[in-house]
Length: 415
Image (tube, rainbow, N blue to C red):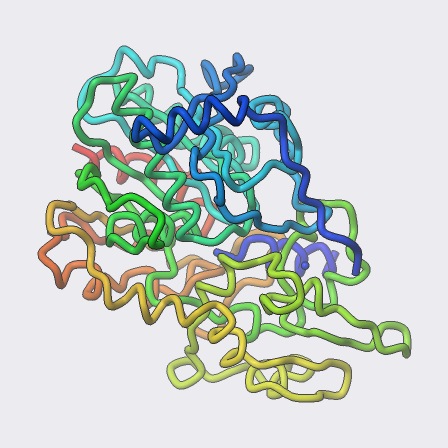
């Protein structure tokens, strides 16, 4: 039971030995994509499937020929049947994103709403039926909203690459609805993706931000980062041996550890980008909180895990090295405020009882993200973006998208 709890803790980070699994699905003919790019289109709709829960799903493929190819762990494949059908493969290329259409998407009122999932999850698991319960997507649809959602190809993908895919999804939603702008609701890691887009954090080959997000609702986001993988070394014990289970597709902070008296190389399961870069989005979200919230000295190798070194049972590069490997991303993101047109709403939780998870208890949190980080809005609004709502509910990280109280808060935030 303890091992399963630690696995879930690692897997829910907004937050993993073997070969990378990266199979490119069958795409539209190259000539079609080249033609679309020549006409200025950044994506092409390359597949459409009917959904068992969503009305339909579309695969959008970037027309940028050199879209980076991210590597995923063997257990990082997609598992939702309809999403796999839309991607055309369980291990799709990062140049693809799936756009989910909620039933009634063409009948609602107001700005279309696009839902952006967090790490490990997909649109269905995050917003349609999280933990088997009614999710935010049907709740918003019942309230008369035109609801869409995205599923990214990589469960822990680079946040700027995923921001480009979100931009493509926004363009598609605008095209099918005739809307000039959309509202975006993001959870957990997805908040960093959405924020990066609305802050204009782009790579040189990407289009500029289209100034087409009106209301941005960020739920349980690590807005000043998180240090969970290094603060809690106990989660590493749950990740070895690596199993063919999506819950094992989570980053370790140890690059070596003792297993049954033998040193084992776990570097390719680590968050460090130099060993395969399987968790780029996780490395980007790291930040230090040791000065604010003291580390627990009860966990094995707590000091060497956080600060780097050779412990009694492990070797860790330390959080500073991991932050550098992620390009000091949170520091760079802080320097880019949201577009001044954006209206921002932020929701955090402070209940530390997420079932099956090694809940974050070294400081006030939602079991995963510190409340201080989830409510930090100053960097986002310093460019003129308007903060229209910011609240803390007594809910844990997942109940922020499951509880009726949270659904009602989001509905109000979108009005």
